[in-house]
Amino acid sequence: MIKAIILDKDGTLIELGRTWDQPSVDVTNLLLDKTDLNDEDKEAFRKHMGVEGDIVVANSIYAAGSIIDQAREFSKILDMPVSEIEEILEDTYLDYVKGHGEHVLVMDGAMNALEALKDDYILAVVTNDNRRIAEETLKLANIDQYFEFVGGADDFGPKPNPTALHEIARRYDIRLDEMIYVGDSTVDMEYGKHTHASIGLATEESHREHLKEADYIISHFDELLDTLDIINAAQ
Image 1 (tube, helix red, strand yellow):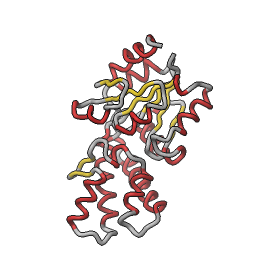
Image 2: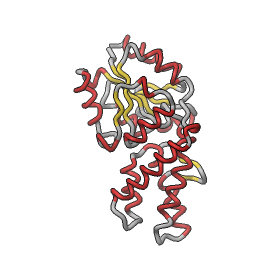
Image 3: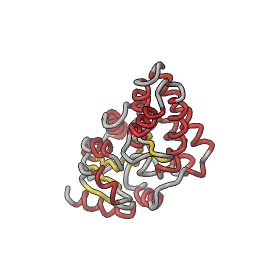
Image 4: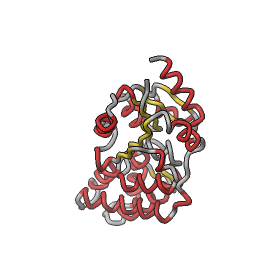
């Protein structure tokens, strides 16, 4: 039987655009201004990172990668240590979240699902965000009380590194095949292969192309409980 449900944060629990679009655009412009790139090359780099106009594209480096992943990309065009770039990125995101709590919106149906699951499962978040940002975001969204464990890329390495899953297994004396992972990106589905099953959340039809490796795909959190019943019944 499944004992733990591990969830991604942005794009899964929390609506992606409102919390990540503006700070990603802002920090991209801030760091690009420190380079000698021409306008054409700057625009190419924005697209490479996942910024198109004033939005972040799903499954991009910004949307699915960790802050360290982002910092390493910027280090290719900046004469700055990766650690310094990472600090600028983290501070920018954290300051934005703290100053714009009204933009931290829980995905439709997620609160009801968490309430229904909390008594029967260990609930955890593993994100490619750094832990400070993750904990602040969950607190602002008023869902932090549901999670017994929050793992960030700065503590356990970025997904699909399974270190955080092994820590959950150790801490709660369960096996990886007694967990499932719920996420919205290609990286999440690769990560979920370390568990019993990966469940992809595709709120739009176009998002399904990022979830080809998913064991199950749901379009709304209302479908999560039925999917869990199917998984448990098959064991």
